[in-house]
Image (cartoon, helix red, strand yellow):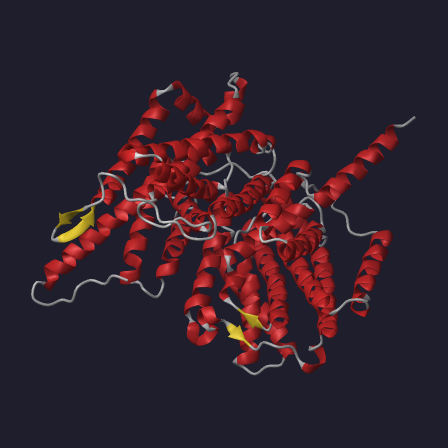
Length: 633
């Protein structure tokens, strides 16, 4: 870690030069970040796809550049390897767009996110298979291996190249979009895709070319980082978070805003550890939250069109259980209650974990399905529930029974606080603000070690004596999960639930008849957070510990995967999706070292085959059969 020189003698001049060099170093990082982020911004601006696989393309660009630059001879070989790697990844991206995303452009945005998440999982394990688990150090850039004297301090010449490259790419993109027919069509499609289609423009190839350009820029950004940092198979998830922050701060679809935001984020990273060491790891998320609260569409962004509901959920299809449905649900719970008589301790532990995540997914499903609010940070309340229960047990000396109440109370309070700001936004901006708040909560858990234990976590969180055995704790989890999921269904079909669904289906009409959108969605957000917190509290007692990763982004994405696999357009899709996804993931992890590849390909296949989710597909088939039978003479 580098700190500024002490203030003595010529110390003032040294401090000024140090901070100036630090600022210039931040500009170099900003150029690389801009290349990756502007690709995502361009893709979203035209196709409206939040491409979660963008980080995977960035990583592939770095890996392929390492291979080509190492094998191609001479100084020219390095630069040829950079360009060829970027072009190769762009071709891969175009193939993925034609084979997968082209089928999903008319589908809800959430399904597109799920498909690209599956691609990310698969690519990460493919990189692990080809290049191995070790970090790879790339060669130095020919002609830029030395350093220049910058106010008495050595500064890498390669960073000067990157600083010049960012504005150059920005200028080239401006010329491309302003001075070419293709650019005019792209800008027109950004503003009104339907009108462009009505004019006879082939949108398929336009979207493919835009996607390929965005992927090329992402791969180029990864390849150009080769001389500056090691390449690893976790690089995709590291960069995608920063890229999403940049495009949201700048305004989705605005390249100039992305350039300005990249500078802001890079400089925050450069100076945060020096000026705000306690909050440096979450500083960019604090800034993003502040920007979205003050300017809901980013610095230079504009209001986005209303999001398409995942699965096309409608009020007519959502009906409470009839007598037959209630009987089947009761039989399912009764059958689950018999499981401990046939299973061993490990199977009971796995089954308990599945039940907990069924409750977690059901809480998110109520928010997404009934409320139309897609949260990227729902794990925050799961984690708050886990920490609330653990702290009540460890710090306050409360018994497990009281701790299971304290966890949801803390989660509900956190959801009330974060939800008050979040529900004032919509669409992608709402999702990104929930992500920012989740990262803030994660940072507090990670750094407030005096209370939370930091990255060492809290251990020794064990159930009361009567619930110590795996069978007894399984029955406790089953009872609470079943009651909580049943209560969520009651809420969905209550007047409050109908009001939420009315806002989801037509916000303008709902507000016209007197429904208060902010208040209703705020309450719905907090209620969903409380149920997620109950799941988190149970999880803490199941594992006997809690760590900051219970509030992390991966768990939030897992929740969305579970909901979408089951089907957002159904009432019970979240619970079914969690049952399938969690069971399958635990089994795959136990069977292979490349579980992400298997799960990723499976997610992609399920999205392509069942865009309405598994339970949604079953309901669609049953509805089609009923219509056919009704039409039979």
